[in-house]
Length: 212
Image (tube, rainbow, N blue to C red; front, side, top):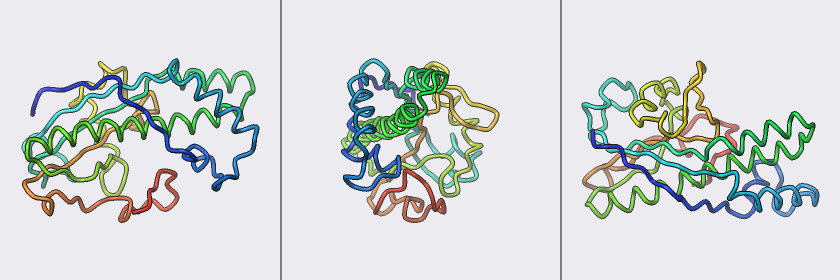
């Protein structure tokens, strides 16, 4: 496997209405009080978001132990986190009884983590495309048939501890607003297609499901 690379200063761009969607509001349905809370959180984003990323290229022999990835000839593996500050503030809001703000902050953190992952994916894909590789859409442990238990080898492979990310007994990452994903690489666009995406994933009620 290649050496680990790090990306800093990932640009987080949350789409208009994304936090509202995660909260369950339709277009233009968000109550004014929620808009005020969201606006306050957005103003504090530079203080509570610390996006970091580690990624590396792996070959088939590096992932041959994985029941899901053993067929992959080459891939990029990535970890993105927005750090612990947002979650620390979220827990503080809960302790103070500000449950509404805690919920909005939680959904904002989820949207921010996804945005950071999209930003990292774009940087990685641009570099690999320039080198003549075709990239699949990103996909993560816990979705489709990739068992979340494989986080046990994914995080050490990316030296997650150096980004402050650890794994719980239930295979969840801490800080929670962290994302691991993979991109398969190939010599042609057809070979780069990955069979699993939002269109084929079996998770019916996923908050992060995207239209394809």
